[in-house]
Image (cartoon, rainbow, N blue to C red):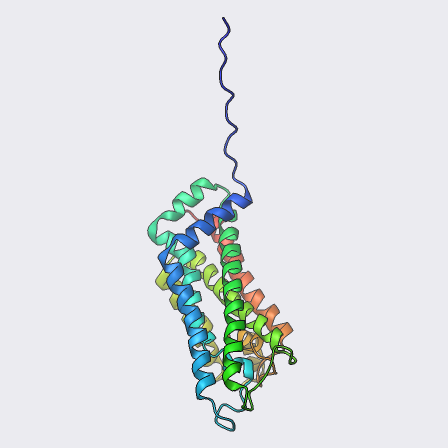
Length: 264
């Protein structure tokens, strides 16, 4: 009598879609994700409504770009998204979860790229929708002022897209810092010191070359992306997008190099 054995199941394969799904599951299952993302949305929408409700024509903000005025809350939202980016990477080192992630994916780098893709897709989608809704809501309050504008006006849609892209890239820069430094407090400190404070200090130097260089720093480039009209002292949107992408990409590349060479 011949004994038959069940066919062996094929080995479980680690594929990019599976890694992406795993990172998406981790992101949406964490309470910190919901807290930071909802806080960012509330900041943009809430401040936008306040600016629209309190604005008067000819006041101190009359020379401010209408998209910048409507999305003033993006500056506060950026703080929450930066924290989220850092928690996605450095947070795993703090909890020890990174060991499980890298054990499942021995090649390591796909984990970092999956985190970056999931973060970028989530933040860009949410913040673009938030920017559009906030601009529309603010304009409903500004319709009879000198800040009245519509989506069809020159530069408006580009600025709304630019605002979402800027927030996403700043978050990716923070995500890279978290992966590079492997410490939540360290990455937050590095972001505050290097991205927010350093340009202000350098701006005190009386050198034209330094002043021109500062225009390509992350915060300044992000500001240029979110404005429908040129902002004095900043570069145009194209170079700003390139500069901010380069900052984020360089940080992620450094994090990838460290991930390959350093022990967990």
